[in-house]
Length: 467
Image (cartoon, rainbow, N blue to C red; front, side, top):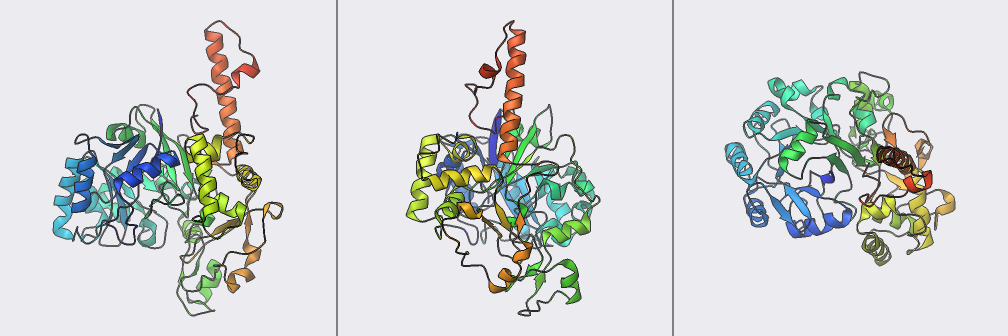
């Protein structure tokens, strides 16, 4: 069975998180987004763990409505590297809390900081039969490749136990698969959400083929056992990430690597520190000029939240405006969830909202968008082509220096390298595979279906992700 999962987020007990990050709210909003499996986040925080227990059906099953939760936590080690742990049960989460409590204050933050290194944390994870991997591995702050040049440098003798790597918002499969040591690992795309807002929760997610929605089912998928595994990564265009390009952390002026090195990583505009971007860091670490994807690597689908597409189409300043909310709710209520509305809905069926929104969704499916890269802690942003804009006003956060760098704007290519695919690619892939499967079934049954009949959506197909 296929499930959409967001395995890294936070609770109201983590710093800089919304007070609305409570399990019932998370479950409700995740369902609207089209998720089935959600990480609890922060499972070592005493008060959050009590709330998890209240929602639990048993030690190993946590469910609210149609959303299954699995115990997860992000831990910061002594070197400031963040690790994601996925645990088999509530009792194992309790054991984890007991094991790391002597090394940090678990009540201070839902994301605990402990005086243990990556190897020691991985040893504890193995003892508890938990899965472990680095969070947002490429970002310059609190990440594996921000402080280490290899997995072994971080995890030492426990390197082979690491089973996944979280790509983060500034990287995708094409970035990561230029590094040979990552080829054996499953790639996760998660939201790292601090808010249940429509453009935060499940803004990135991973689709898995699992035997069932349990820890054991997820474990088999991440370890790629018995033909289970990740079937799709869904996430930002890497350029949208706030650390994709090398840039000043104060004024966000972007620099090429030679430019930054020449001025010794001090901004020539304001004197601030220039932080090395993910693109330049990957180029430093890369074993290959072009990505080499293992046979089991699933496609990576570039996606932005539906609310942000609506915001762009209407020319509104925020996803929280009444117009954006109304249109989003109309689509989600009609199609059942965001994934259905954004990916699968037929163009004619979308016409229950403003035509500008329909045109924007269709343009996005075709990859007809312009990307302004982010860096230095400022998110990149997308722009619709001129003929689809309501107005030509630039976002308020675009600085004068950024305007000078407009020549660096990237138009999304029609041909994607490696595993990078567009909505139209995915739709075509699904149509071809559905046709092939239906014809094979028909031949086995001794009947011949016409091409028209076989291309129809099957009863069990709910979205383009079911392929």
